[in-house]
Amino acid sequence: MAKEIGPGEPGQFSAKDYQDPPPAPLIDPVELTKWSFYRALIAEFIATMLFLYITVLTVIGYKSQTDPNLIPVPDQCGGVGILGIAWAFGGMIFVLVYCTAGISGGHINPAVTFGLFLARKVSLIRAVMYMVAQCLGAICGVGLVKAFQKSHYKRYGGGANELADGYSKGVGLAAEIIGTFVLVYTVFSATDPKRSARDSHVPVLAPLPIGFAVFMVHLATIPITGTGINPARSLGAAVMYNKEKAWDDQWIFWVGPFVGAAIAAFYHQFILRAGAIKALGSFRSNPHV
Image 1 (cartoon, helix red, strand yellow):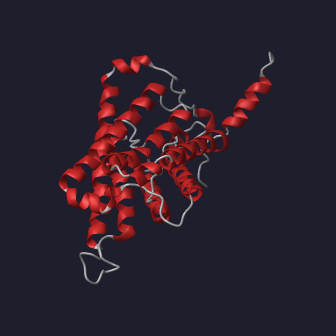
Image 2 (tube, rainbow, N blue to C red; image 1 turned 90 degrees about the vertical axis):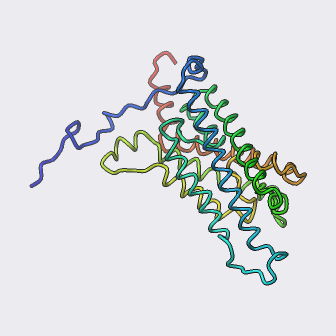
Image 3 (cartoon, helix red, strand yellow; image 1 turned 180 degrees about the horizontal axis):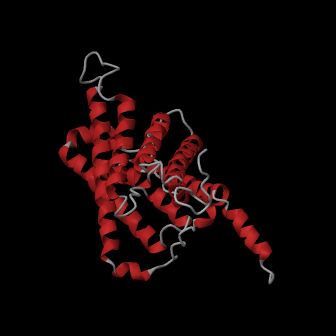
């Protein structure tokens, strides 16, 4: 009969042996003196720039390949299709998170950064600077597309996120909230240190489920909003495209992702990780309360 492994013995995970990492300080000015902080900012800038360059170029390429004005008999199966566009976004997130996770955490999205900030995974200074780097990277990435494909860029919408005809702003906002919730919830689950400790015998490649989450959300919401779930992506395209419709709908692609990220952070930290129960237990056990 196999020997039972007791708590604390090699090969057995015990909840009592695990300690959550301390929360990140709200404001940590010491970060500003470290090269690792600026290296992380550069990584977020470059990753977001590459992300927008590849994905927006894919969108414009697909539209040019199926343009009825250029092709006498449009092929409905021509180009990469919506499936290919979704793969471009999800695949690039997988690649870039894999490349930058060890340097900056591989956020590449202000909504992800915001959710991790609410969960006290990053400081306020790091969160704000990450968002700035991501937005600048997105603008530069779309700028490269516009520079290389200027005629196609304007003709095919510049990859800008806009609410599709036939949908109300409420529907578009809900699609962005739910889509971002799926993404940020996946980020929390894939990077949960307690899960990593418990399932250390099962290798988990965190970028893979995150990339798949982006892929699946794009499949569902491309017909509604073009799929934002990333304020930097929406801002970068709007700045370069600079059309009224893109700017009128821009608020949807900021409010929706930030609300979705906040809900995901609350759900993971206070429901799944029982943060609310722990806080209540600590409150009740305090004799001075």
